[in-house]
Length: 94
Image 1 (cartoon, rainbow, N blue to C red):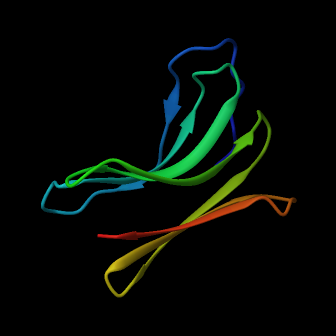
Image 2 (image 1 turned 135 degrees about the horizontal axis):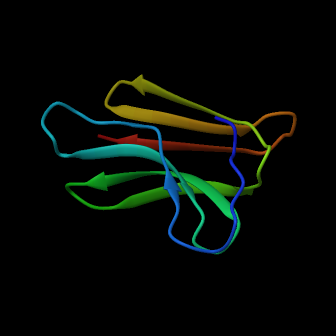
């Protein structure tokens, strides 16, 4: 995903995610612009709770790769900022 420019602080969200067929929630990597800069992290929004994993700051022009892999009952998510060593890996038991 190419990170877009942000003109000013506000409620901006851009998120790729997956949703189970039972509608219990969404596993999503959220690009959040509330502070005037971008922050990206992965979390589970739904039942039983809202859980967020590790994330990192990013900026316009960066490219962030995201990967979701099912391992037994866990979804393992990885965010990686291209051309850097910045990553955030999380596991969600869903």
